Length: 262
Image (cartoon, rainbow, N blue to C red; front, side, top):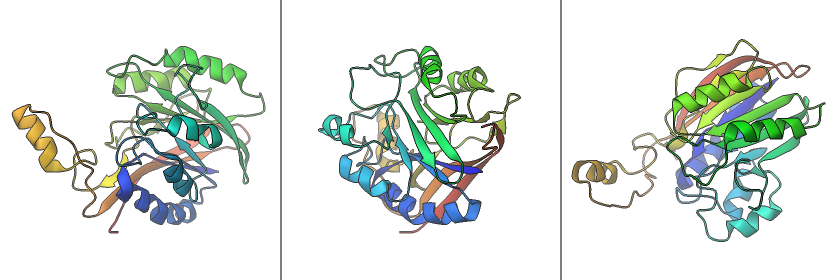
């Protein structure tokens, strides 16, 4: 069986690229389940209920990250969106949930877990290692296909999580840095790992933002807004995980990248 994971979706252009390309990628790689990280999908910061509903027309599950609450009112909207997973290591008093078990029509149940890192990230999250142990212990024993979206800055923390979960989950895929890495592999215990899936955003941009604005910040040190770059081709990045549905162990992981002109 194959799972398709799509990296951080940035702005309207990213959303349109997902809607156009994901159905094609499903067919090309024979993927029966699609997870999309959508935490930057609403104007480049956070997500709204309407944006989520739009993306869920082609994705099975949406994961979030450190920008989960950037859009006003989403804390109320998420209560009615059962296919969105926010970081599990946020306070239990926050709305939404950090793990979900979903029906994959081709291979039974799939658990999706979202976590945020601690290194160089906001201090409001709890320990992701301790949290993931608690989450895994609470999953039904029959669920053996488990995908973890680890939304973190430091590659060291991401790699550590990969080895920590090796043999216990199907895949650990990193998000947040928006640049696809070339270290995809299947770890010794049968867990697929990739430090960062990349983003869905403008091919000519700095992490999906307008180049000139980012250069102004770096060269002058002055505060400046970083508008989302919506012009030019949009690059979609992600990964396909091949796995054994009977055991949940990964067989392969392949990074993918496609461009589309909208």
